[in-house]
Amino acid sequence: MSERTFSWELFNKAPLVGIIRNISPDDVQKILPVYKEAGLTTIEITMNTPGAAEMIRLALETEGEGLNIGAGTVCTKDDLEIALEAGAQFIVTPIINKKVIKSCVKKKVPIFPGAFTPTEIYNAWTLGATMVKIYPATSLGPEYIKDLKAPMNQLKLLPTGGVGLENMAAFLKAGANGLGVGGQLFDKKLIQEQNWDGLKAHFLQFKSKLAL
Image (cartoon, rainbow, N blue to C red; front, side):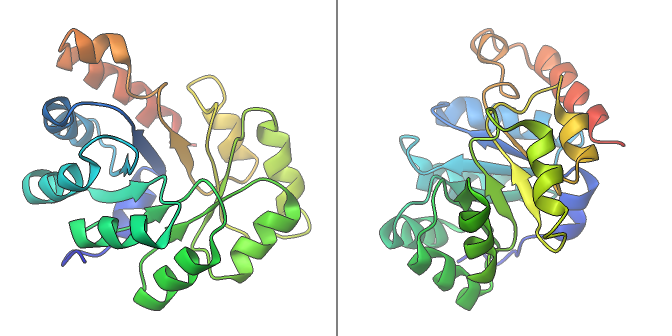
């Protein structure tokens, strides 16, 4: 497990979880300092990315200061053990796996499990979820967050999937406690071109939308 723990202070400065999936280790090492320079603070590396555990380990070693670095797409206890061994400071899942949630709660590791329906979301919360990832948020939109929060305002929600520059503000206004953003944040073209200045400008657009 990581010697550094998840920092809420960092997360609250920029309540966005950047999702790194299928990006090469070399590119990730170049992206992380740019991400930090843009004022973004929390990043997850998905466990279905080749070499994910090593990427998490290296990210913590080289860029861990000033960043929360976690593991995403954690579906099983095996995934969880590998992620924690690599030093992941928080865990994100696309589904509800009771064993994964309970293990994280026991180890005091923040866990953001994925859920869709009100019952799933509430169940994840009662199992001890730190924040519930509403996934996929695309088809539901910001109004769904508002509707969930009306009767269950204690929930902490992280809409993910289909979140981008055009709807970030609406999700936050509806009561989202953070946002999960993947492909729209990590622009493939800019990364392929190694256009780090362009990528930083792109990240800054996202950072500006977080200031309500």
